[in-house]
Image (cartoon, rainbow, N blue to C red):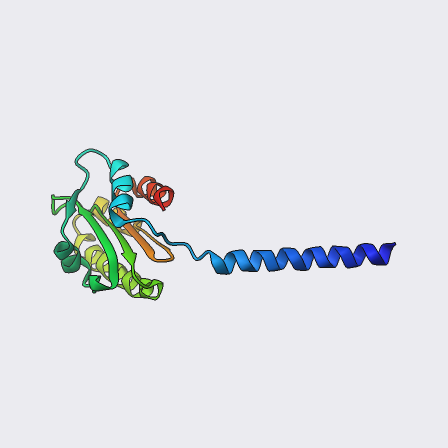
Length: 158
């Protein structure tokens, strides 16, 4: 009886491990949703007059990333140059480009930290606490006082 119980126990553990492996492999994150749907969900969570929607050309100028590799870009920034608040949501065509985009974002953050460090400590602090999140083919970047709230809206929209 004990030997049979052990065999059944081992088979259950193997089946559970196989199930977990399949789920992990099959679900890489990301989204099939349109970038406009993602942007609308996140922009609803923004404070009034916090940021305004910018063009793809503005996004390229800021991040120097080849946005032809994307299925959509939503870039928001504060109109006041003394406010570093900005938000970027990108839906990539290929998940493998996420690291390249993440590197471009980090370079932007570092460049801005160097600029604001000596004379705008509150803005420098926002940059230090920026949020960069990659979920499969979707990339989220935010520098704002409520970045966590905006990230949560992004995750719910996925």
